[in-house]
Length: 322
Image 1 (cartoon, helix red, strand yellow):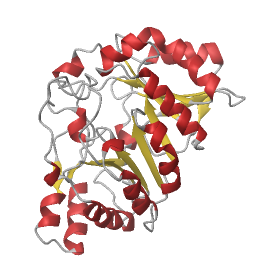
Image 2 (cartoon, rainbow, N blue to C red):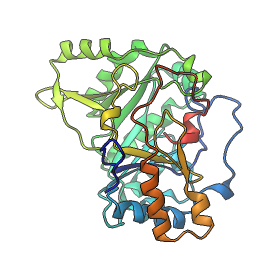
Image 3 (cartoon, rainbow, N blue to C red):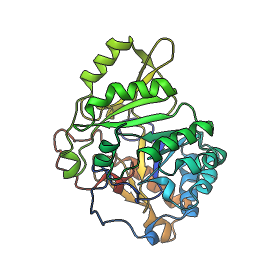
């Protein structure tokens, strides 16, 4: 098992397959950003499969495909299929903005993707365009319909709650109730100056309001992520809260992130990393890679410092993987 120096078992990999995206969400890729990785630097599917095979042998059971927008990576369904059959991998999931989902949902399901998280920051077209940088509400809604038709259920709807959309929480609740989706409310992570200017919203008051409105009780949902879930007793509605600032979850962190160019980040809020692309392309043996995995665990910090040093990180979310 991969265990860090604080005794946390690391079993969950968030794998970025591209840093490109067809949107320009200000909290992820600010408009005008040009610092994308060259495709020659991207890990190939063979390199990814080799690394993840070793990870799985060490206890990595869950893999989430992220980006950028992962559905922009050519033949990503083939990669999902290769990962899903690796011995030891129990679950392949995917996070998407859903603009490409209506045409790809069936292929993803067939490839072995078991769960989808869809980013939807507003139900107002003008707010979507303001936050996401593109007028794509209709495409996202079509993607959700296509995913439901392909058999994905329940679909988790991610909304990053900020100044521009905080008044839409009730509307998002109703939207998810009507369609059987799981709502996940996410606090804005202060990565980069643009994200910090979007207007952080503490989710604890919203959580209390929803508890009172629905009589929510603690609930467990499949997946290895940081969300804390509440739901109605009859199972009709479930809501998750991802609260890196108001109620951080570092003590139970079980995940690491691998960027499209092969950098293994040990914490979203810290800069420590291990360059696996260099190891792969300089003739590292499997034993060398396994040793590097174990050494990386010694770099994983006890917690982030988003509150104490919000200006510490200048990289954007797309550079690390969503």
